[in-house]
Amino acid sequence: MNIMRFLCLNNIKLMLLLPCVVASVSISKGRRFDNEKVYHIKLNNEKEVKFIKHLDKTMKLDFWKPKSSYHITPKSSVYFHANAQHSETIVHQLNKKGIQYKIIIPNLQEVVDNQFRKQGKYEKGMPRYHQWKEIAIWAYSISLGYPNLVSLVTIGNTFEGHPMHVLKIGNPKTGKKAVFLECGIHAREWISPAFCQWFVNEAIYTYGKDKAMTKLLDNLIFHVLPVFNIDGYIFTWTSDRLWRKNRAPTPNEKCFGVDLNRNFNASWTDDGIYGDPCFDVYSGTGPESAPETKAVTAHIREHLSIMKAYISFHAFSQLLMYPYGYTKELAPDHEELNKIAKSAVNSLNSLYNTSYKYGPIATTIYPAFGASLDWIYDEGIKYSFVFELRDDGHYGFLLPEHEIEPTCRETMLAVKQIASYLIDLDT
Image (cartoon, rainbow, N blue to C red; front, top):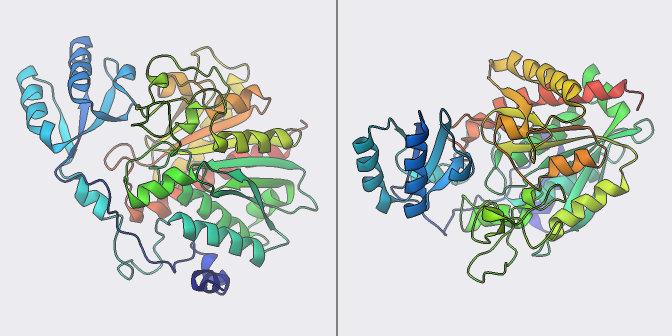
């Protein structure tokens, strides 16, 4: 038996508190970010917006928030990453134009290195980020250790052939409704898979002990997809920590990857930036053209009659949103969804006073076409929500490991609040 698998299978009790910690931690040997910087700018007017768009056009900036310069507007808060070569010019130009800015990460490589520490340097009991192999072994181990509460199903394979596992968590004898938890659709957002693991661990550990969780698992079956974009996630550990898309080839032989959250059949488009294979939001050659998207949509359609909610987890920005993303028109169920979102955000805030905004995707963050949440909603699953987890920009996609536990604890409160709402529904 593989030694990693053996150790994991014999440490089930440890995994109740945190995912199995047995595999050595990778050191990224691919793309480096030495002296590359992340900037934060609050844009005051249209003139400043035009200038930042000009910088993007000439220097090809990596926008963290919003996703591209296409979405920036006056009074908006912008985060972008630039290479070391352009940094001196950017600072000079910003100073010349009188645009106020902060360099929130002066050397991106140092922050990346902090997420690839050697084994043995972790604080005792502190959760950490896990490679795909560890997550896959953990999922298999959980299903073996708790067969009365957990089952593992394979819903398909990624482009590179990795099996996509869904963990079904709940009492199969009494659970009649289903909730789908989607994590890791964007590869670089590591806190997302970390939350799915936390959710599963807390669910199985507190079942029969915590009344609220026991009630949830007796009434609902949670379909948990720990990592949607497995190929891309592996790539962030081995080659490029800031990779977003999957790893499929595109019509441009120099560029790889489809943004899986632009590949759903919900106002799918290949216009403008969505049709550029070299851009981070490339939507693919058509709706559900990516095997990962096909696997998820097939699983949802198979369980559509019992699927009552779909919750997606992203990073970063501290937002809780609901449809629509492809239009600024309010969804038919806007008032109810807004009420649920407000209640969930209040629950989340009650633990550490973390501030979250909530509202429709298009007006709360920016318009997005072909997203999973809009497709789900249009399929009839009206209780559809997406979290943008911690933080609000200081670390962005590189949230330190000491933030995992507080992030997951507060997010659990919000998810439990949403799930509790479903139990008494007559639908």
